[in-house]
Length: 135
Ligand SMILES: Cc1cc2nc3c(=O)[nH]c(=O)nc-3n(C[C@H](O)[C@H](O)[C@H](O)COP(=O)(O)O)c2cc1C
Image 1 (cartoon, rainbow, N blue to C red):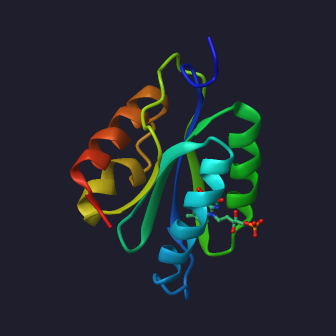
Image 2 (image 1 turned 45 degrees about the vertical axis):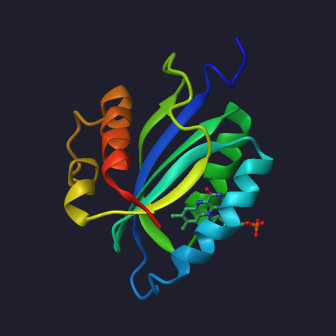
């Protein structure tokens, strides 16, 4: 089975860094679109004005490399990985997208609840994504 059908999936949450203009997120989303496509990374970035939740899926080396870069980005902080591995799931998204959402939607992912990990966190993210609107 190829990576396309059984991808490496990584989900994290983080918070916009204090003093950072939320307007930067549009620029991040625009440049990410092209770069992720070139790396065959699908997924989605959700932003509620303060918290991020992002799913990245693709080949493990590519996803880990990108996550290493994202982790060091000073425009966000409190980066916490909720799921990272091969869960035997198909790709949950067919492309990369950016969506804004209501803050109440991200609460279960950002609350620190230790039961919201791995497949549970991925399922929670996908239902949140479905409820969020395209920008
Ligand atoms: C919340 C957040 C999500 C990001 N997501 C992506 C992403 O999906 N893809 C990407 O290429 N860069 C993303 N970035 C930007 C990277 O951290 C980094 O700035 C960018 O990849 C650097 O690209 P460069 O090395 O070409 O300058 C994100 C940044 C933040 C703060």
